[in-house]
Amino acid sequence: MSLVATLGLITNAAFAQSKAKPQNPQDLTAAVAALEARVAKLEGNISTGDLVGTYRLRRIQVEFSGSPGTSVSSHVATGIA
Image 1: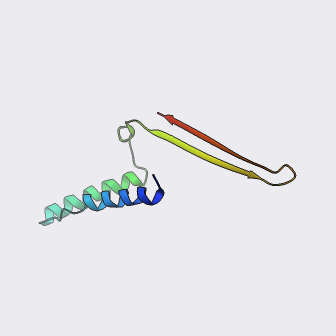
Image 2 (image 1 turned 120 degrees about the vertical axis):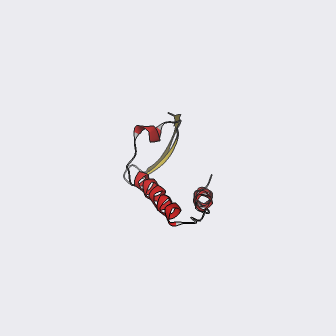
Image 3 (image 1 turned 45 degrees about the vertical axis):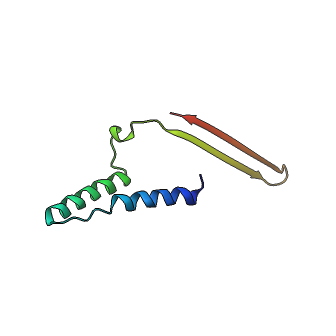
């Protein structure tokens, strides 16, 4: 999946979650509190429970070296944790 497609999916998901409009001050207060909690997680305030699940790793590395020993190499690694 390309970076542009990934960003598009993330953007669409974010807009889909924010379509509900608060109807009264209590709803607005709750919406702001929920948003602050989500931003706090993005800023690194996470717990072990937030990380539970299966993760897939894909790494691609390309190296270029100049003279005197000119070389090009690539490495690929995948894994599931």
